[in-house]
Amino acid sequence: MKIIGIGKNYVTDKSEIANLKNGDQLIFLKADSTLVTGNRDVAYPSHISNEIVYEVELVAKIGKVGKNISEAEASSYISDFAVGIDYTAKDLLNNSREKKFPWALSKSFDGASPISNFKPISEFPDLENINFDLKINGEQIQVGNTAFMIYNFSEIIAYVSKFMTLNPGDLIFTGTPADGIGLINKGDHLQASIEGTLMLDFKMI
Image (cartoon, rainbow, N blue to C red; front, side, top):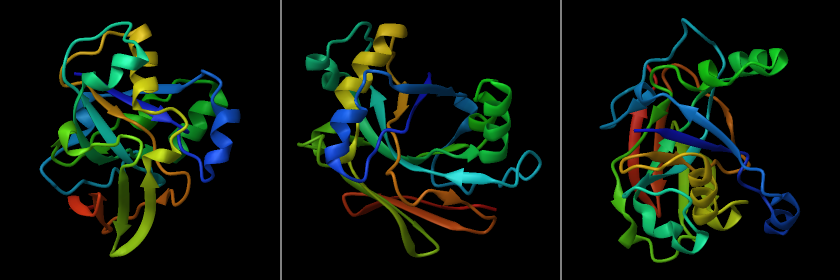
């Protein structure tokens, strides 16, 4: 099972999409040991970083094997959606960028990918109009809608499948809303929803 992340994939103004869509998608991988399921609390990784950034994202689960998938067929490879948090150790990421190192350590520490239970794709009749959001300590921090994606689900799947075979159970974190990203703190309570339904509910401990 692979965890694939898509970076810098949302805009605040849909008119920006055409200029930003140049075919170069920002793709990274996360270790499967980053996953936290069942709304279990997540231990703050203070032994490696004191600058952990949260990003709420829709997570697409792949339902069948695919390689060189066409955009026209790509949505049929999604079986389910969840909502998740893509955590990044910002200080490690900055250090990696400065030294031109890979991002792996900043993205793949244990607990870096909490996700909710899944809902079948059949519950989402319009993939380009899915609402999701994140509350921290009861305050709404991030609000997203898939109409503001630079690359939609089909474009992501088609692109990634040129380079690597997608297998059942693979997860794709499809990007975070452009606004509201920030640092998480020990003790914070995170709640993420899809279409108003609370699906992810845990604390940093």
